[in-house]
Amino acid sequence: MANFSLYIQQVPQKGRAVFAAEFIPAFSLIETCPMLIFNPQDGEHIKQTLLYDYYFEWGEDGERIAIALGYGSLYNHSFSPNAEYQMDFENNSLLVCAIEDIFSGQEICFNYNGDAEDQSPIWFETK
Amino acid sequence: MANFSLYIQQVPQKGRAVFAAEFIPAFSLIETCPMLIFNPQDGEHIKQTLLYDYYFEWGEDGERIAIALGYGSLYNHSFSPNAEYQMDFENNSLLVCAIEDIFSGQEICFNYNGDAEDQSPIWFETK
Image (cartoon, rainbow over all chains, first blue to last red; front, side, top):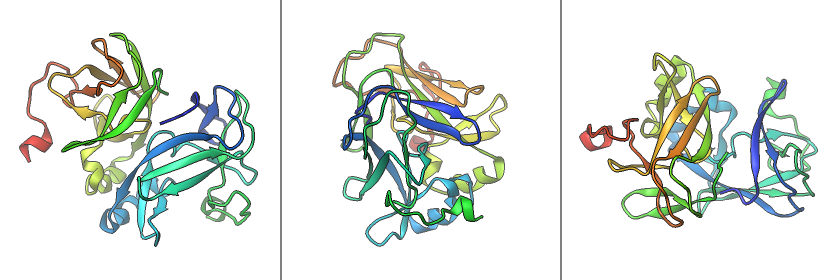
């Protein structure tokens, strides 16, 4: 569930994006996203679809894949993000947290590498 | 985006379910769910996964399939629902609307047949 008011809007060149509709203080939990978890066989099908660009590696060993509901699939990537995510395997949830103050009208992004500081290229840059 | 405060909770025998966290007056728009739309080739893969139980037929001709983000994938089915959905193909959104007053703490359900009155068996009953 979202703890703050959010909205979705199209952004040129990026598609849909998640925006804050109110002030979100740094270190707040923005949203708890329920996850759909796939078994490995389903995962092979999922990776052959547009969900290739959406899935998260899931579980302690990263062997399963998961899709985020809520707005978890719609946050864009940034190398200088204002949010980050944590994976709660026990509750099959993705926790999206602010890492700095986010103001109403700002886009909310996280680093798709997981670690907010990780500057490694991501798959859609290296394709 | 959700216009009312909602929460997700596990329900015995049903899995996750969507609940109202506040009073929702009849005929209110509860949530606008962004949809992920698949081309027919992707759709064939999707149907072979657990998403078989989640997809909506999509488009004027119903030839595409779509998965609901937000909480659109987590509403349970009821033959006496308190909500219904409308498909907004132009904006690739699923609109979930209250068809009666819904009180805080009540589960929100719609009829998976689309029409709130349609008493036809649904696929997971007929399996």
